[in-house]
Image (cartoon, rainbow, N blue to C red; front, side, top):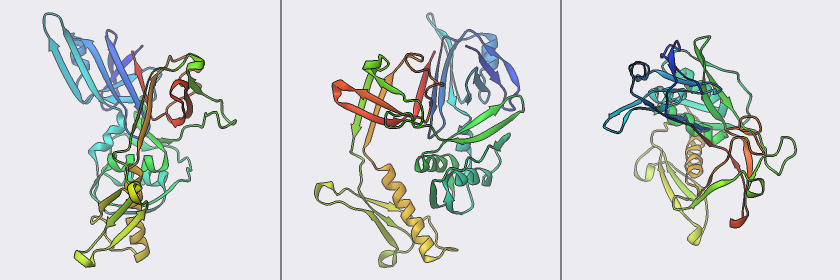
Length: 323
């Protein structure tokens, strides 16, 4: 495996050939991350500097070195570097002017990026025409935070793809394919003990954070304050939540537009306040289905765990490659 090191301008600085381990975690709704361990040598010390970029042959992603740890003892001589993938640059930007948006999620993601202070080398990629829509208002918000919320709202992944030859970074949006047992358009991908491709399974369910009814408070004070409500439930099934949305301003909006912005904030809150259900498992990269050929990040696949009576069609939102 080739690990190549570039400077922030995407010029190649060298290559790491003596690493002891690499964990490469790809994520759909937010920047992925990495952790690299290598012996302390003069060359590694020179290459593994904060701000430099790590690229891995065969990967669309690249990572920014943000954390460096050096350890030397009688039994250890190691440098460890960690960081996020290039889309983590968006964590360094604020949405400063008030943005009122009503339209397609993909367009909003692109518009917010171009409306912030320029990130060097970053360009917009192809507009895919995804149809999911959203209405919201944002002021003085972290760009990364809002991009991730939009990503989850529209089930649209995003990434910064480096073009090392052209010295540019492309902002891409993408959606995975439905590869579940329920459809026949794409090749089906099933992870199950029957296929010997489901190992070390860990299932989690937690509904402590579940909320079914939300009250959103907008502008005003006391009895003059504007409120909207969403959701429902009764008895023990009723779980209430209050959202303070005073940051949403009515200036320049009609009454209907302002209320819709409050409703959208409420919908976002309910979308986040759900019962969490996840299944983590290990699989070999080429048993029955080949990683990055038959399935990839963002795809929806079928998982069967007969012993637990578990049958799930789930989107792959995180993949961890361990070398």
